[in-house]
Length: 317
Length: 317
Image (cartoon, rainbow over all chains, first blue to last red; front, side):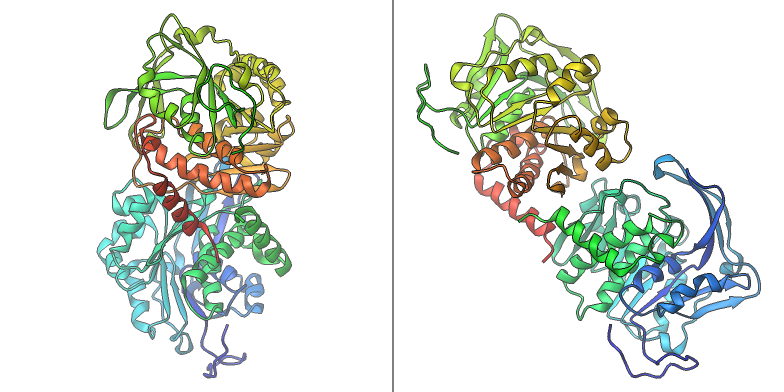
């Protein structure tokens, strides 16, 4: 992470442009899994992303919460340097998602979605957020993603995540966003559904024709792969004996990769591959706890040890 | 592959002990896929195994066919040095399997199984087959696998494949076989089903406690992994845009790995990993044609080029 000299107005910390800005949801989740009923945790894609990315680089969040948001529980992120000045606090309630994961975590159902103040979320980037190295647009309405793109000085890398609902509702806007981004994250279902292809590699290659330079297809326990100007790279998922809560796994994957890239000098093919390896490691910690807890207090030495273990499991001498 | 001086009675070729002996089915398959109806091809697990293994080492087949077997169609294997002297020709019909693959090749149904002379198959190894470097027992009745083990001088490596039906019918015999083998191949369903574990790594580790030194779990398009004394190794499947016929993919995978190992000086962790990489390459060619055709006339240069491509897709500098 590079330290820059620009002044940050209203900030006590040493002023500088952020490495990574993430725009997305900051929420409260109520989880039902095979082991708990109605567990309340911090959630939201921008929150999970920031939790992972801040292990590698400085991160600023843009979002909106209600006046009920328990900021004290997010204090651990502030301590790790995450800037919450872009999180607008509005009168009302914080976005709440309640869901149930079934045995084996292959399927989940939404019990309740209460948008609260997030319903009228209109991202406004603080002045000192407008020149990030990397911008991540989490799965929000494509119209809002376009809006954010107008507010920033072109970053080195713009990445987006998506969500079937938004594409259904606003496909034209989504295609417009795709033309302006460098890296698209999709899961295997979205990849097939966006392209009408059955096989994943042709699907990913077709997505490249929509605009992005790189596409990463996430296949959960079956790994992930990248397509881009340097061909295909296939990454393994770190194997776990047990999953506690998969919420946030995809966001933490994106966060780790983009945080890693922000910490590198250049966005090269080699760095993308190394970053995906780290993303797999961080994602595996993520699913070992509820909400952010799988990664939250994990010592750096444990992250490094698992990274080595993954390398040992995948290298062919 | 090492050349040995032992005389091979009744063989025109230079006499020597084989690198690999495979015991299993030699069959006729009638295939129904999304692109063909009732296509008749050569099949059987020992046949597919030999097709792959003979790209790396000398292979001898032990099996039984009826007097209707079209040996002239298997001539390409003989030319590549595969010894058919262990294939007994009996009055009657060859084992016939007719099956249908559904769209996407995720499921298949058996339309017809006519065992023919294979019903009373009792493997008898010719004298010059009895000291192989590597022995592969394809998915036949465990009682027959035990019988073969009594006929050979302990090879460097004994590997077996299995099949849910045989485990259902003869679980005790199967457990007996497991105690005498070095390497077990299973698919993900068999791994779960044999161990009552949901996650695949714990399942594979439990299988190790049944006897084998190594277990390889095959996950189709999602790759394969090895557990053994040197921990876990995860291999990728070479990605294809299209599958023509998956019959024989698993047998060709085992054949390529064991053929590769036979061609190496030692059965080390490094050679296992390299062999699994080659197995992925050979398996990917296999599913690109009907029956043996995906690999049959494939020039060596193409195999090498795809191996390099797979390495490029999986290496992290």
